Image (cartoon, rainbow, N blue to C red; front, side, top):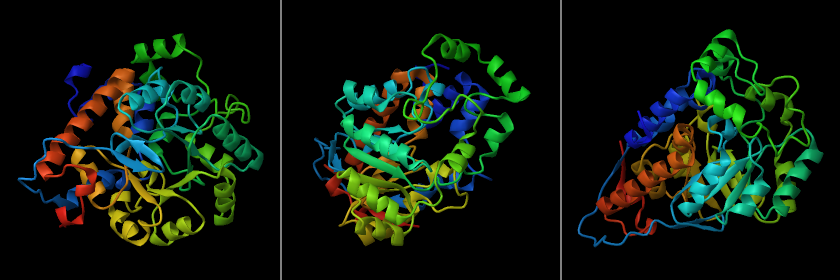
Length: 381
């Protein structure tokens, strides 16, 4: 199977599975507990039907949106995700370059493997910094200051990960940072020698956002342990309000799910929220961002920008979210499988296909711009 054989999300996933050692593929692919929420994230879109309009004159279609003060050429952005240079040696460099080519936003994680400063210097496309609130308040201040100095305009605080989800696939394979693998996991690496060769012959793996503050090279940590031991479960709305004030710019909460919390975010001055369950990797049985989108947009959509992520595999999924009032839609596994499959070329092919789907589907819906989409073109089963 080659990159040219990849025509949709599932093709990229299969190619990524062929190229990645089992523990790393399962880290991307897996969710928490019984993975019910992971599956529901995609299934939720099937519960809503599109009602197309006809004879609307759709020769020219404008896919651009504005969210968090950023003008994007596409209504999708590349969500911040951790450890990208484990999936392909280009990591966030490939993600950022592809995002710039398509004129959309990308995110860099606190657990990113390329520094936010480097990416901000190289790329003009909007960058958001995905922030984890650590027990070390000095570290939190230092990371925010570094983001400001780098010229990053959008701060995205993740609020659904104050303790680690139960990711049993990682427990079975022994996946951790740095690697401390079980025998079964080691065998999986031995079966994918090209991945190992790339890993060993390129830049040494690091976590530049954290390396100066946390020793991640000592005792091995699973991602769940990192969340549980390093992040601060005592974080409150008062802490976030202080961060919003100190940041003084576009500030987004990622992981909001309830209308009450959405209203509170607006009250303390947040300019955006992302409805998200962390890709089904935290609280299994949680509602999905898409399931919650309608009621939250109706409650606070006039006070801040509402975005969502989770389970997006098709252009029609994006159109359904936009029709319910999402300002933009985050992609996660959608581009991570493509990154793992072929680096920057993979991400660009995935975005090319997403753009083509969006243009085709907008025409079939009779919509010349995102503003033409609304609840009237949806029916709930």
